[in-house]
Image (tube, rainbow, N blue to C red; front, side, top):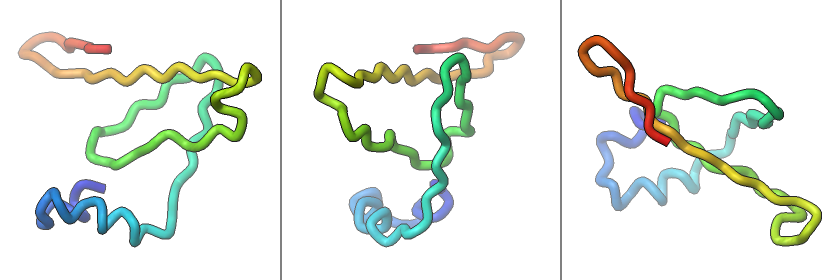
Length: 75
């Protein structure tokens, strides 16, 4: 989480991530969207067959910004 590293210089963030021993796995499911608050560090898990013709993945990342009376969504 960002709060765990906000007092460190950005150059020390990578070293901090190497000390993390617990991860939360959130499997993707067809037809679902995952929404998070933007304050959590995240990464895409490994796919054992990635790079072969057996498995492919497209990942879209978007941002939502609240304006005065509406939301703007960027993909």
